[in-house]
Image 1 (cartoon, one colour):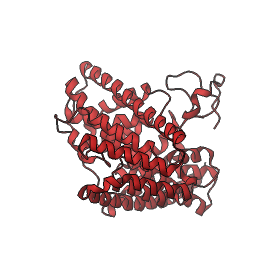
Image 2 (cartoon, one colour):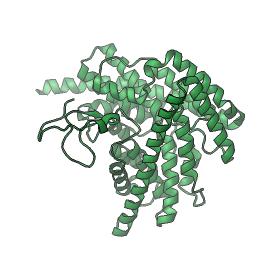
Image 3 (cartoon, one colour):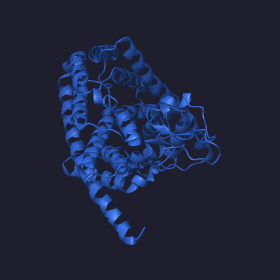
Length: 431
């Protein structure tokens, strides 16, 4: 390619990536503002939690009526990146935003990454169709939308960039989308901050020299993180599958899930496990008296909320679970409390989402370079030990994590156990 063509290509990505980043940044700012308002209102008026079943009934009815084309959520986004047939409905952005805010207003335990990714991808697809780009460019803009949404909602543009490239295919990076993803993530973060959004500030752990003894502790830590990730992934998928079979009606299913959350709330006697749970995440970094059961209870609240069909993502709840788990393991293994909480925060989601590089970078952006190399060791260990599973069943995989020959095609994680065929040596998998 000549210098002139490379310059035009780079200019195109600067323009398109900036447009995608701009709309993602505005969407994330609106979403985070409304989320803060909803959380504050619920905190002041906890009686609202009792109405979570009614909220589930209403949200479910709205989604059953108008949300069928977008029910796939993040999995629909990933499928669209690979298959690229129908445009992501523009209604995905407002509907998932409203649904997630209502989930948090009434006490559901959910996150925000799913909403940010779906808003970013649907808005990016609208941009792609508006500019009538080629199918290849459209796929790259979808990755940019994922990056812009993720990076702007957490204030971590570099992690957002890598997440957009890493999440669509396990073990492979979509480098062709690197420039638009980076531009969208950086611009999206700048826009969100310019609109007055402030992200959570976490403590910066002191550097810990890596020794054989410390390495051994981190390997044990990684095994435990992998076990918890498997419990979460399998638990949410199993609960969702069983509930869909037992209660086909989405409104009724969400109402029953909301009632279950209310019962759990009253049984545990605290509101710590409702909503995002950011105060408890911050507490995990500094409090050696954090209840050892905190990580398990948050996992349960989140599995019930998401399994019943409520809107939101898994990142922040998994941050909670990971940080609380790290707090417990720090006391058991003799590791620094703040460092172990930070490593657990990143590693659990990295393992559950099959994005170890993105979450290792996210830890650095949130906690400082002192978490290296510890977070990489734990996240990669947990990622490998979770096997061929993840919170996004639509993720494609070309080669099993433990190695072996290439699969004959890119297989969704949900189908990997029913696709035993392999490519002949040296043959690339089909796109």
